Length: 137
Image (cartoon, rainbow, N blue to C red; front, side, top):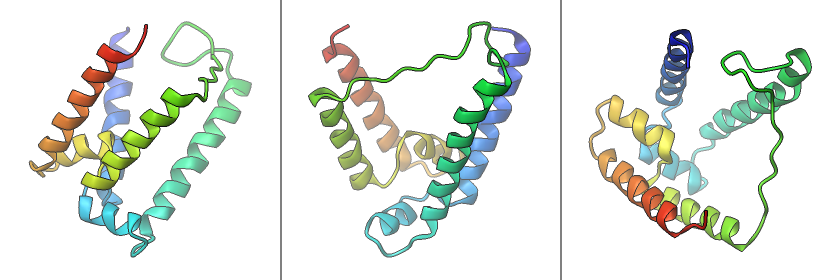
């Protein structure tokens, strides 16, 4: 990977983390309040993310033959919707509901000094390791 690619990825990560912090998604209390239907502010964050992602996935492949940072073309992959996928999604959702964060906001929260999120990140790492050991492949 080119050094310029690392710079673009780093800046993108900073923007993503800043957006998570600005939207308060790095605070488990805010996320849990949303999941308990008491605060709908994160619905705007979710809607904005879906809108940007959908627009990007629809427009960029039409405007460019290949991604900016890679030499290969765009790919369309449809992962199978099977029992394992549904079980994994359920486990992820239960974990998110219990601790109030998913991986991106947990790591961004650590960067903002919320050290209790280290437990969530540790759980995410253990879960990813176990999935890698259990999954066929």
